Length: 359
Image: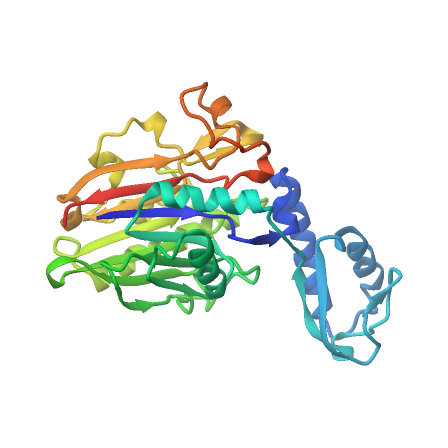
């Protein structure tokens, strides 16, 4: 059977801000949105009125203030002026404006998944269960008979999902969105979604699908968050599974390199192996993401397997053709799918990765 993992970067729509090609600039705006949201939670806006108005002017193209009820009318900010005097004047929340992808981009996403030919497809950054249902039916010809998406901790609606073909049904699932650190804060930025899939002869395959905290403008803080997430996944592996006997895979976008300190607690887990080491893939050909600002080829998407499953691995590979301008990135060794005329047409910035196991 074939198991794959892919960060689809949303299936049909994405926050406008995420479509910015300059990821560093997008990160700056996200910080401003975070500050704006925090200021709007205050009981009184008197001291920060000028700052709230200035921030709104900067970020208004990327957000929408959803109001359920209000004492000051349909808008708490009108013509650049803050009408509400404090949090008690309105009920609602700040959301990110979204825009739909072009039909071309959506089709390329489907083309990558079809090319992957996975029996079990792990998915990162799916908008919702309903979105996956539509995508599977309309663009994948209903290739996955069982599907699951659970809302995670990310308020932007980028969740973790999984699809399975009929021969490999989902038996059970478990979310870890409520896992907490000692300080009471939630550990996972999204989730560590545990899914049990039935394979031949009544055996089970357990998949732990993850999307770790991304690197941002506060590296010490984001590194610490990823390290906490890596440690928690390792704890789950060693307390709920016997890696010498159980078929287990940790899959997804871990947002850091294999030699990084934040991922060390997970990658050093006894009985867990990186699939690339099992198939002797050259280290300079394991990249799954190209970070343009640093001109860096990053290995941030993973398939890690238990010792029990490692003995059954027969192959592994990377499907990069959904990335725009692949010919330039690989000096002509690989090419993007025909018809990908712009970076906005790309299926994703990430490659799909897969492994084959004879179980």
